[in-house]
Amino acid sequence: MFKKSLRPVAVLGIAALGLSACGGGNGGSGEGDTIELRLTSYQPPNAAEPQATERWAQEIEERTDGRVSVEFFYQEALLPGGETLQGVADGRAEMGYIADAYYPAELPLTNVAGLPFLTHSPEAQGHAFAELYEENEDFRAEWENQGVHVLTWAPVPPNVVAVKEEPSGLEDFAGQQIRAIGYSGPAFEMAGMNPIALSQGEVYEALQRGVLDGTSGGSLDILIDRDYQEVAPHFVDLNSGNYAVTMNVINKRVWDDMPEDIQEIITEVSAQYMDTYIEVLADHEEEACDALLEAGGTATILPESEVAQWQEEASSQVLEQWLADAGNNSDADAQAFYDSYTELLQQYEAEAEYEPALQRCADRQ
Image (cartoon, rainbow, N blue to C red; front, side):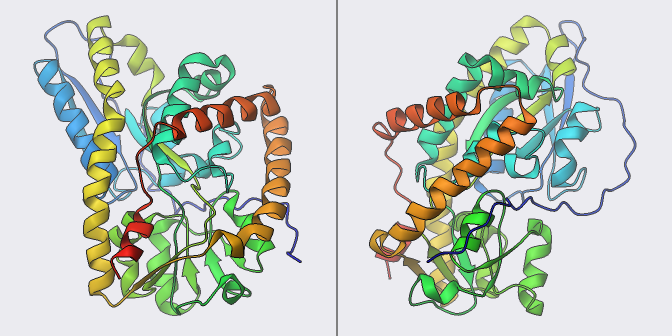
């Protein structure tokens, strides 16, 4: 019998940098002027998403004949991950890379992405959110009320747990201190783990010092980007599926003040972002598998039969918790939104070609 839990695990951001709001982004500039945008990200620059976003920014600069330029600030150099939404809204940065799990209260509908066991497909998830953002007024208002406009959706692949000791099954995780985010936390707790909320920037040291037995809230590529194979080389897919969604946003005032032709170009380039991201991700995942195996690590996929009971009990209880949280933090019909989201997931899963990276890596062992 699995433990019951009704508390999602929010990500803890590291201390604010104390930066004052500064000007930038000539949103109201006339034709011929340069619109300079600063994009803040907690990601390292070599990760798949930043590489795809740099291609996206380069194409925008080329298609606008240099009227738009983007300067990147990586690894929380400008804003902590947990402050990015507010920092973009108040102008400390014009653009930012956001993870929904940092903002459960501000983005309650978006946090449906954190529900485990819904999908293993980043393609399906990304397309579902893109369509909802265009068609669902409540969903779009959730973002606009925060003072930002979503430009691109960057869905994450399935959740991978990196641990120090190679497990033989789900029961080996019982009692372990595992970094978790969002609604993965209560699901992990029901499987006997002790979910710990830490920002990604704190995880490596926590693993080194023994504060953590393992970490989740990252896909194969993300865990390798942060060198976790050095301190927790056994990577496991618990078959819990995707755990979050990320996106690039822009200050809404800056966006609204842009010339219409600039908005059209950015929107057109953004519509192709998903294809670029999946292409970059696939290459990055192959390199990540190389790094894991070269470090003496292992890739393990828990069979669906082993996690079936956990999935059955946890999925319904975590959904119940999300419905309550969304109902408390949004005027939208949470159940109707969930139904729309899952219907789109099924639709786009039928068209998706992505195969989870850890499965591909396990096949290479």
